[in-house]
Length: 340
Ligand code: PHE
Image (cartoon, rainbow, N blue to C red; front, side):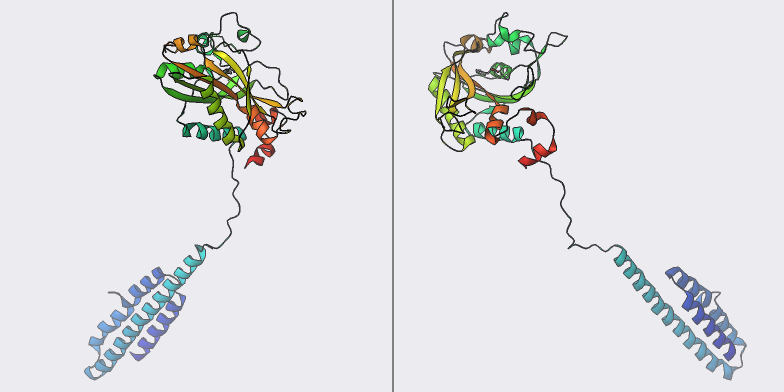
């Protein structure tokens, strides 16, 4: 019996030594301590011993059983600790690690300036409107008092589509759409792309950007136009700009003007940028022609308005000293990244 106990113990110890997982341990427990386990068999065998031997042997078997249980438990704890350690190492994250720089994009300078101007005008109560790039003859020309034989309709300037529609040549159709959808008084701006069949050079692109503005109310005069333009220019250029109005002809305004500011570069003395005149052309504008108000279902006897059509590309070029409009549309990231 003693020999049995020792050999069982030795066998258990060596198998315990070899057990590397919780599953090995469970199997080991079944093998030695289970219903049909080695030790259980031994305990049953005790019945056949003589009574005097039985007590001592029983004690030893029970001691062995207790040791086995304790050893299994200790081993189990060690295996669990090792597994935890392994997991901690595998899943370790260094939260102090420098994540490095992620490439960050930026808005195109045209978009940045457009947003800035939108902010200036919305702060003064203007609504920002959008309009379609593909327009009808009515919205692009007819409603804007551009007669059928006007040179602006010339095939040279306008991209016509096969279905008779066209790519809008200016943002002014937004005025018409705006008027038809609201009643005076109102103030709107409409930024967007416009298209003209231009010979492309440093200052001309076939697709460029304008920002239309319009205010309609009772008794709107040129003074209102000048006031809003001056506030806008002061915000965009960060200083009070001296402006002047020159007569300019556009079929949809009467009177029509070109609004100039003092040359940003020479301050008026004359330089190559302002072609020695000391003034820079900023934006065509004027009082809305009665025919245009009528096309927008507004009675010109009751209401009047002003409108302007800022050239956004030119403004961006002046602001940043960009000498060629093609940079703006070139999709060259080296150019764009300068405006981050
Ligand atoms: N739509 C005109 C253009 O593109 C500009 C303009 C707008 C002029 C509003 C006067 C008033 O040339």
